[in-house]
Length: 128
Length: 381
Image (cartoon, rainbow over all chains, first blue to last red; front, side, top):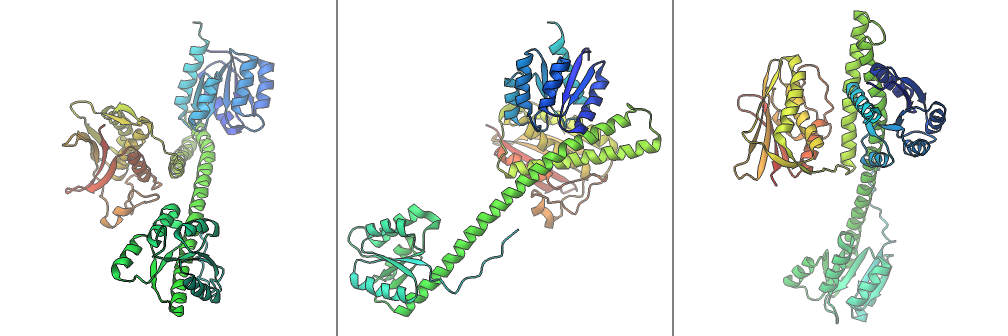
């Protein structure tokens, strides 16, 4: 991955954060921040201003879709990739409608997660 | 939990009976019999009135005269049956016209029985009691079926939720064990690697089981939707074969795909059909002894109405007495995988449901020279 900026990883499940952060660390020199729910994600986003957010859909306090809307309101240029556990077509469509760049199923093999992250982040951050 | 079948109560006196006759004397006699038995009775003197009263009174049984002014008893019966369907109360014709042709017409109109006039009070009471008992049992059966289908839906919701919630942790376990295996977080001793390998393969097969459970829950909840698009079946099979061959190589087994000379385009849901093809291919490897040659082939039916996709394995075949179980949920057979692979017994049930959602069929046949052929037939549209 060419991208070497800040990434915010949001998921209420600690094991997923641990797992996905291992994948991201493998991909290159990024600085990673974590949040366990939507509210914390927005606070961390305002504090750190990451360029990329990996966002879980089902979370307590503030769900992924609502968090996505608020993040996009703060910074329309931020790249948000949804982390889903199921390809619920409606949720995915909703997320894409609200400006998510892509979605990744958490149960896909890690090589596929890595490839999807690299492709989405590099194409969204490369100067066009 | 299945509630026990309720026993027939001796006391049916809370039952409501609608008596219909245009003759006041007959109605009075019937009323006498009914009240003596303790039933609640309502009376109508025309077919039209009977139809109105039925809606208000909701009787458990109807005694219906045949010859009446206005619509006759047979017509009244037909209208009640068409309006209330299977839930309509049993209808007993009371008639002086009791030659066999009338009886046949009455029963054809949906009548449950007939009673000849003049009445024999004991006979009338006995027949009513029998029909009420039958009807009570039928009612209980409806109730039971309703409860069972609700319980089944609840089970599916639970299954779906459990499977769904197990998936993420399993994906993490599998992924993290892969990182450990790869030495990402530091070198491992051979013993440690062996343990990690075990964690990895166990989480991998659990993930697959959980996915299958989720599929079944989704399918049973009636949420299986196929999104049909024109796709090349041979290309799909060719891709799946290439992937499965990587796994098959571990058992020195090989799948040969005899591709058709020209591409076969069908209206299919690519992801769902891939699931079917993958499942059949991995089964063929799973149940064939190491070193087997498996054949996959595609051909059009003679009339060109269907496209067939078949896989011929070199496994032990399907025992005749277990054939029924093959495509059913949890229908695991006595036949065992040859490399210690896992099976939930759900894969083929899912395949069948997906194939049927495509308007196709799936069958399995033992081959004369040993092994088994699984054949999917899909309509060419």
